Image (cartoon, rainbow, N blue to C red; front, side, top):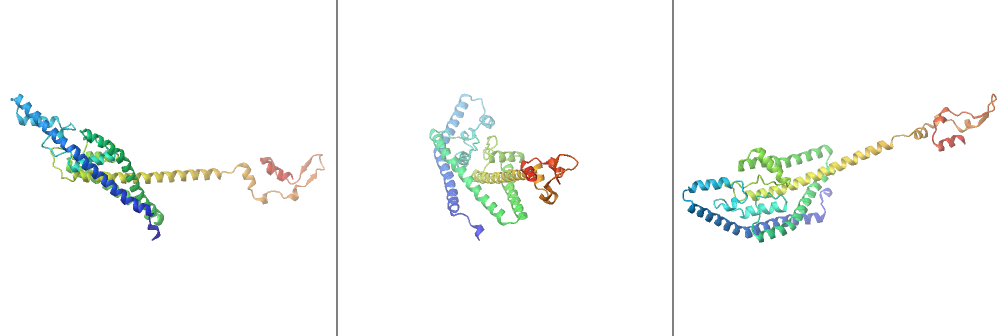
Length: 324
């Protein structure tokens, strides 16, 4: 059908962009894992040696009590998870993939960062090329979805069109803003309000870092948990981009309609001259009645048949029309 056709360059460009974006995230995950995991293992070993030395110097301390103290003291520390040997690695493939996603989307929670010089240098160049790629990906994905909405607007009747847009917004709200907090509250042990707070702060790319998924040392997460969260973030950002595009289009149409109505109202306001100009011609005296006649009672020459409306005339064009 003709209205279902999409330009060829969009058909070829969008899949390549999606594949390139996914490949870029996978590449970043592998490189970050390669550069940081060994350094994390070394940091954990050093931390355990420091604890053993501390216990040897202070033999009166209980090892279990010290472990509990370190656990409580390091709960608010960002690098505690990387030093505690009992916690899963912060730089396995799943966590590295999640970190790569937070870099290119500019969320930047701040709870995890490269510790090696090589990792920091790579992160700079990875963000330098990844952020524009992310913007292009979200823009193209938003344009693709917006094109389908415009197609729907063109070929579907107004009530069905409004219903379809409402269904789209409702479905997106449920998938990206309502249901995810339920999952996060169940997995992380948060309240629904905390889960919704994390969802909004994440999708708006504010990323305070006070709530981050997969960082509780007392919980066991499935390997794909953070990777799936990264994918949810990417599509959530694309959905928000589309919502912003639709909102911008609606605002533009509203302003154009308001300007058109204001201009139309202004143009239809008749001036006093236009009121006289567009009066019914039958209400004006004919030229036969405009021949001057002498008044026998005085020496003043008057124009016969002139209506008192002449006093009301402003335009010289109309005045000359009657004086002729």
